[in-house]
Length: 69
Image (tube, rainbow, N blue to C red; front, side):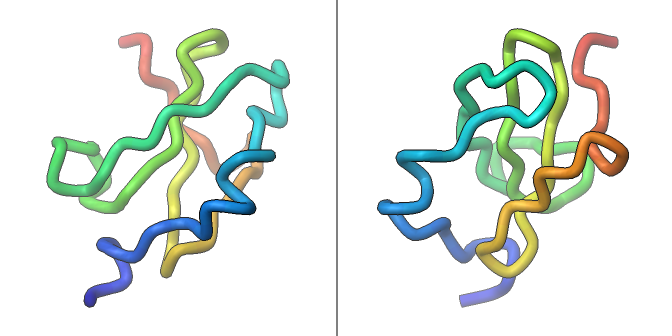
């Protein structure tokens, strides 16, 4: 399994929230068209996408990308 295809552990996934607004994060697999070619966690409230690298979410607002245009 490649790094971009690894998933987040279910126990961790259940508690993750957007660090910007505390909104719910939606899983976006790499093959679903994530712009960076890696899996992402997206927040539909503040329109940020956080990369998932090797199954580890990188929840740093400074490294997130905008998804609203």
